[in-house]
Length: 257
Length: 257
DNA sequence: TTTGTTCGTTTGTCCGTACAATATGCCCGA
DNA sequence: TCGGGCATATTGTACGGACAAACGAACAAA
Image 1: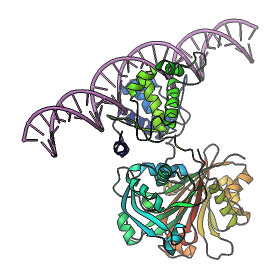
Image 2 (image 1 turned 180 degrees about the vertical axis):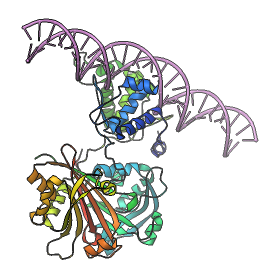
Image 3 (image 1 turned 180 degrees about the horizontal axis):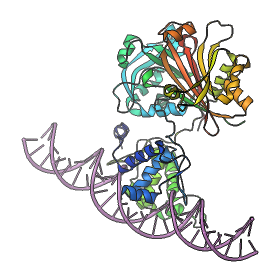
Image 4 (image 1 turned 135 degrees about the horizontal axis):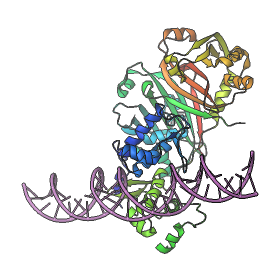
């Protein structure tokens, strides 16, 4: 097992297979629930009935139902049947980074394409923007971020890491996980806190060009700083997300007092 | 560990079955990875080898591996095998609880000035924007929001409440707390969840005029829906926050696993 | 009327089989 | 030497079967 083989094996995740029987069945059942054929609280046909109706094996039915359960659409009860739990799949905004979990999932689900790396010293303006000290050395990667099967970038980003962590920048393209997780893994740093700021901007022509968007178009500018357990800044990033491709979504659950 | 011993380790007691074979196998494989028996990047034994080693069916092995894949521990490749992807299951992160708190603090710290109230029936466009059903009656308040000692508004908002809660709109100016809290207090409704979406927009002339801002200037458009414990929508709002007056800040604290 | 038992139904676990899709290595020919 | 084809290995899909566990309804007994 050479490290080389390992790295290539970890490259792109296997492609999705939209044409399996169970995925087609899952999609059909999902649309039936969404269209109201089976109401929340009602039972959908049993596994045996679905087998007959679609002329597939029980295995195929169960795989489809597994997906619906995973989406939170249905709930199965032995002896009872399968009940509709929600009319629509769990709000899963692929573009959403309102929670840390979503931030990580977003990083894992999107493809990052490094345009350029360079070393630099933060001047006063950059230091202010990033929340770091002027005069410090940083390694910068300019990155485009894509959703699966999309050729238009969802974001352009600049990622800043400390020089001693600079090697992780070479792994961004292929890692399929957040950059901060790479720093954690390869440098034994623990990220204890992430701070994020969101403002609205209009794209200047150079940025718009890179993002294949219209100059002057609105975009979210999301800045993030990553701190270790001693509250030292480890990494920072700035991203531009054109607004018609990205919406920042958050869900607050309120516990009963 | 001899196969015999391992096999008996997988067998559940006949009367009490706290664990299935595949969950026991998943646990055992997880602990082998965590203990370093299989390094990140290396292959674990093939499905066939695991079948033989533990004297279980391929189904049982695959169910166990499904769990490991779900945990992000391994990655399977047809033709290659199953590779260790991480040494430990995905870290369980906690969302910073400050976010909802900050939402409430912001509401308490700002002054709201009601411009106009009216009753309306949600047409399709508004229903879509608010995440409500078309044809429903709502009471709408148009509001400007000011930071302390500021004469330029930080936001303009439209707040939508149910007709039976319409009286709270008269309290907005003076209450000094979130509108949803007013509904909770005066109508005994418990808000269980708030969903929020943030997008970037550019201000159209009428909005800009109201906000004393430049037409075309970037702004955050923050939409929120408030749900009760039965997941019924109780209230919705849309706010426009000119970007140079407001930045949406979030802090995520990460617990060690 | 209420409680307990039984039976039928349904999902969950686990077994086996077969073929498809993917990956890798080796061999042969140009 | 390099490229293509083939064979083998491995996971993924899909089929079938059997039994366990859980549930609800119906019926019987107290």
